[in-house]
View 1 (tube, rainbow, N blue to C red):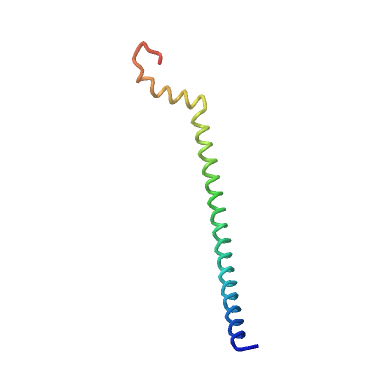
View 2: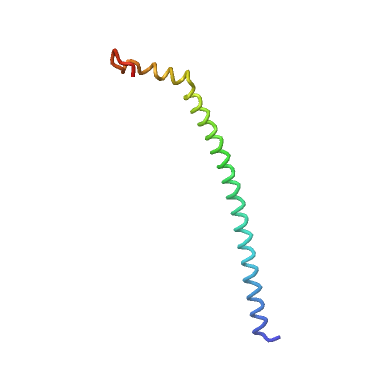
Length: 81
């Protein structure tokens, strides 16, 4: 085998090794990012559940009646609107 082939073989092996290291780092970064995003999704789901509970509490008939009672002074006398 000629010197040129040996140099070419070593160069290709070096590039392949470098790409392998790069791919491993990229995979590690993606795994870390996936974990971060999963935690963010859990946080947002908890926040959504909390907001839904607050909305349901506001929309109960009793809560709506209490809110309406707070604004009865704004309706002119003699009007039922």
